[in-house]
Length: 366
Image (cartoon, rainbow, N blue to C red):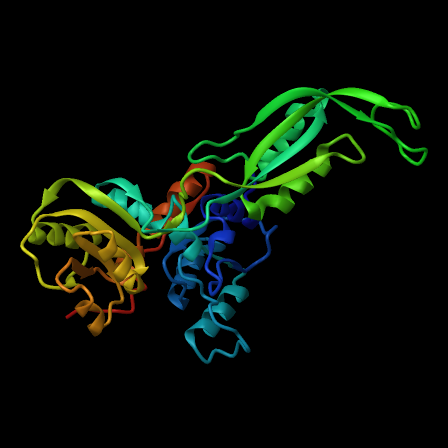
């Protein structure tokens, strides 16, 4: 089966919907055409000229990164900086570029959940939750088209509840309608009141899928005017959010814990506040930049906060209530390559997906 850019985009957006991204972000397809056939995909954290060259050498005509190459406005492509040179190089080599950034940070299957699992945390929850608003689509359909319609709606991503997919509920009832002379009804006759046994189908969906669900319904529903309702609802606890909070099954000594983090994330050095001489059990974390969440972490009574990009005065904010540990921005998000690989390998088990061998970390240690 031929895999296209669009197939990869849809698979990644099932993992981390674009609707989850922060307002300032620019996640999604940045270079390339959606119907372009693919020969292979290269996974990386950042897109640079070296990464594009590596894609060419590995016969990959799509690059998937965590950090967007195009983040601020582009007014020209003249090669004045690495972004312009990288863009020009990718276009000349017909290489598509896709980024999954803050939407992957916020997704319940994204960066922070992955780090929490890697550390070995239990009872994991978001550090700060995002809205858990969802929609419920209710559509009435004759029994003959029940399965066709249900599968069409599932195909666009609706019916996801937690880690379960293809979730729906159906009940049977009698629908009535009378078509005018201008109609060509699927069942019944114009100007005659008609009763039809119908299925009431209910399916949960994320708000950003509404238009796709409508399009799917109209594509397969036999009625000229199908009855469709959308209800806004809050469903249980919010599962998506920024950061993660969890507990170690067995408390660890402070030095032992931070040394384990150095090994896990391959970090040569960790900047941290003073030790408090008490065991580490409750752990807060945030992949990438997390200094704005220090107060939140303290309020949660965490023993340690793992994140990056802390400034000098941020460390004072710990106030001997917890340990702040800077594990490095690149180091905390290098796992995104593994997250992408797991998702794409599951969806396309025989397709060529490659890890980049190039470290794009701009920070060096001496």
